[in-house]
Image (cartoon, rainbow, N blue to C red):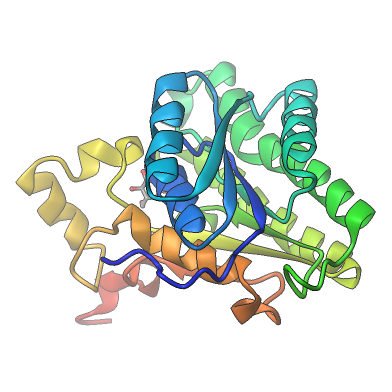
Length: 271
Ligand code: BGC
């Protein structure tokens, strides 16, 4: 699948949390190929973040790596300060960092519950708050974009599809859906666009067991009407569009990028 060739984000500055792997890495790379400078946040795997920075630079783009645990207030504030100091401001936040800690409910520990909520929901709050503060401070820069800033919350089809054995994850994503919409309503008058992307099953490390054998993949495909597992670049291309002025009138919307997973595929026959 081709990367975007049009520089629709030329000169804009983006931060992608969890940008060193999976969906985040594809989003960071795709934004950079669309002309944005991209700060790649990572938690602990510095070398993967640095190698993505190199890949982007080799392709003629601009990027830097920035460490922070998105669930920690001070770390998030320092990360935003450092990116804003380096590039002068910020135009795009892709709040992508997320984790799974799966267990049947009777066996789920409080630590598993808390960690998932802390990263997937509190992390979104902490990052969005810093981004909104910067967007409001700076306002619209017409040469760069019609909007003062764009926030893209990476959620999941499990913000609407219940998921047994994953109640912490589904609860975090369900919460994120209303966080995104409420924030979109709150800051639209500041010319800030907040939207969500809810990926389905995308081929990344987080769900490797669901696709890395032919049997697992065949089982997974029964849930995907379009007949293929998603590629991280499917999300990257969507993020470029949602961050660009091509989607300027889109506020508080979730794009389900899922090959039809949210269409109740069990009803393809019968019902
Ligand atoms: C989860 C994956 C899962 C997909 C579809 C994602 O949000 O992180 O593990 O494969 O939803 O169920």
